[in-house]
Structure formats: C-alpha cells, structure tokens
Image (cartoon, rainbow, N blue to C red; front, side, top):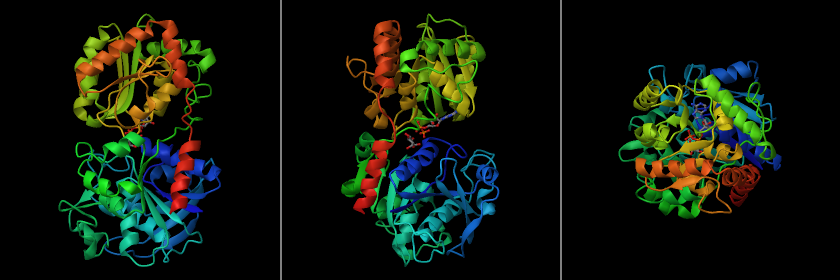
Length: 479
Ligand code: ADP
Ligand code: GLC
C-alpha cells in the first residue's frame, strides 16, 4: 500500500510545534510495518541546505487559478524515508518561520503557498500525475494540506483516497471568497457542504468535509471537538461525520527523547535511566549553574517548554508565578510566542534572579536539558489535542502538572491513584486550580519514596509509535 504523507513541517529541519515531530516519526513507523510511505513537504531553505542536489522527479504544469507549475524533487531522510520536496522558490525559499514573515505576520500569499502544497498532494493522487509512483492514500495534516481532499473531490481523475488528521482545530486556514478562484476551485465548491465557512474559505473545513477518513491526535480530543464548547465552530460538521472520526494518541520518538542516550545531554549533563535516576539530580545542578539559578536541591525546580500562547494556559502560571517561587521553588522557562507572555516571564526572571530563569526563543537542545534537569514539568493547557512535552516529561522522570484536557487527560494519571499515578491533574482553567496542583506536586516531591514511584510509573510507560502506526494502517486498509 502506498501512502503520501503531506505536511508543512518536518523535524529536524522545519518545526514550529508537534506537527513537525509527528511528520518525522509516523512515516518511518509506517514504513517499518511494510507500507510504502513518501513524505511531501515544501523545499524550504533548511531542506535545500540538507539536500542541495535533490534530483527533479516530476514537474506539474499550471494547476489552475493563480497556482504556478512546480517541480518535485526527491531525497532520502537519514532514517531512509523518501521525501518529495515541493520546489517553487518564489513560495518556499523564504527564511525563518514557515508561516510568518519577519514582521511576525502571516505571509500574505499563504493561501497560494499552502494551496499549492494541497494541490500538488491532490495531483499526485490523481491520473494527471507524471510521477512514477501513485499513492493509494493521501494523508493530509492540518489546514495547510486540508484543501487536497477538496481538489480530489471537485477535479476529475482522482485515484487516491484521503485521510485528514487534525493536530489543532484552532488553525483553520481562513481566506476570503476571492481565493476560491485564485486556488483554481470551481464555483460549486462554494457551499455549506463544501469549502465555504461563514463567508470565508476554510482549508481545514474543506479537509474535514471531504476526506474519506478523519483522525485526530488523542481519543479525548476526538470527543471534545464534537462539543459546541470546544469544537471551535466545526463541532456540527464533526458530529455529522463522527462515524469517520478516530482519535489516535501520538507516539513520541523514543530514540530522540531517550534520557539514556539523548545527544543533547553531553558534558556537563548526564544520561540516566530508571535504575540510575541519581544522575537527574546532577543535571539539575548543572542547569541551575548554567541558567544562573541558585544551586540547591532543597526546593523543586519547575520546568516549562512551550509555545507561549493562550492555548498553553501559561498566563495562568504567570498570574501565580511569584507565589510558586515563594513555596519555595525555582522555575525555568523556555518558549516564545505572544509578546505579552514573553514580557511577563522576562519581568519575573528580572524580579526574581536566582529563582527564575527565562529563555525566550526556540532551542531543541535546551528543551532536552530542561526535561532532563527539572523535577516537575508544567503544562496547564486550555486545550491540547495531544501534547508531546508531557510524554517527554514522563519519559525523563519529570512528573508533569497538567490540565485534564485532550491528550493530557489521556496520558497523565493523577498521583491520587496510588498504583498508576504519574503526575498531577487539575480541571478548571484557573490560576487557583493550577496553584493547588503545583502545591500537591511540590509536597509529593519532598517524599522521596513516593516521588520515585511517580517517576517510575512515567518512565516505564510505553509511548512508542508501534501501536499508533498499527491504528493508522487499519484506517488506510479500511479505505
Ligand atoms: P504544540 O504542537 O501545540 O506546540 P506539542 O506539545 O505537541 O505542542 O509539541 C511541541 C513541540 O515543540 C515539542 O517537541 C516541544 O519540545 C517543542 N517546543 C515548543 N516550544 C519550544 C521552544 N521554545 N524551544 C524548543 N522546543 C520547543
Ligand atoms: C498540535 C497540538 C499538539 C499536538 C501536535 C501534534 O500542534 O497543539 O497538542 O501534540 O499538534 O499532533
């Protein structure tokens, strides 16, 4: 069975969040099951640099509307996964974030950029394709490739079946009516049962409407998005298509995120395992020293690695952060995003030197080191389709404090459960509820024996891709 996995991000080259991680990990897991998977991704600068000589394997002519013709190049990722690189320099050879210009705003031609990505995914799944490889399934991810099922629906010659995975319902790919023509879609697509969404064109809705199967990244999120409270305007459609919707919990890359072999834990950091957890304490001292925190082990070190956005609920933490430091405790934060949140955490670090260290930016290495050094991880998300950092934390013996939502609810078991507890869970999205959970975590941390149990429960749980890959294969086969 041949699968085209279409994505706008792929780690380690282009990643703004979890989608990049999934696109790097799920295709190889499917290949290990014997499926013939290729990943379609734009030829961004980082991929140009990694694969400068990727040969052209196909060329699509003009594809309708304002969409240009474009070349496809092929390369092979280090793990053996074939990559199809969509080469249209005018759209994709731009520095920085894949979606935003240097001014922090969406590129004004994003509808054309990701329209082209979607259109090429559909082209590859249709009779017009000139590539000598025909996918049976086009697997789309989030709004950036959400238009592909619509193209396959409205244009002639479709061959492939489509799967649409929602990693985040909050990003809907909304553009104005004129974009319908610019994207080369016919008038008939402008319909309540088509791509139209409250007077806009929505890439995400197009995918949810037209894909043969829908998935999202945790069982709880699959239920939540069918409710009016959490469905972000798509709940009705999702309820209508509920028999097509499956929640499959993401795996994590257990090689990249393995505390016993982590390449970012080089000197002076140390590797550790469930049987050699003492090294975690040494990593804490290293991080404290390097981050300018007081080097002491008589108080818990809380860690945050996150996009700093409303979704992640870190404004709740900002509200009570001074009280948390007074417990006493320390806090280390790595993240970037909304200016007001960046400023709030910067101010906290400034007011409480030695107790709070904040890095505004994106750093893979620092993310690993925080997981390895912190005692407790904080993830108070308002909503969280799956969430990866809580799973990394569990694996690194860093029990997380999470809100009971989406994938967090599916992976973290509150310490109140003596046997299975691996973290701390709270419900209302309020600073008080978060503070209460933080207090419980800080006091459990002081009980060595109990803490070891919590760490072990997390470190020994299986978060690999074997089971999720099997479930995706079932969906492909059913189509
Ligand atoms: P989301 O995709 O909503 O941001 P996830 O938890 O699924 O949330 O995935 C986030 C991914 O991005 C994780 O791999 C996390 O380590 C990483 N990440 C987020 N912010 C940063 C940052 N500032 N520096 C390094 N890695 C980050
Ligand atoms: C999104 C979600 C996150 C999920 C990731 C990968 O970015 O916000 O919860 O883990 O996609 O599926």
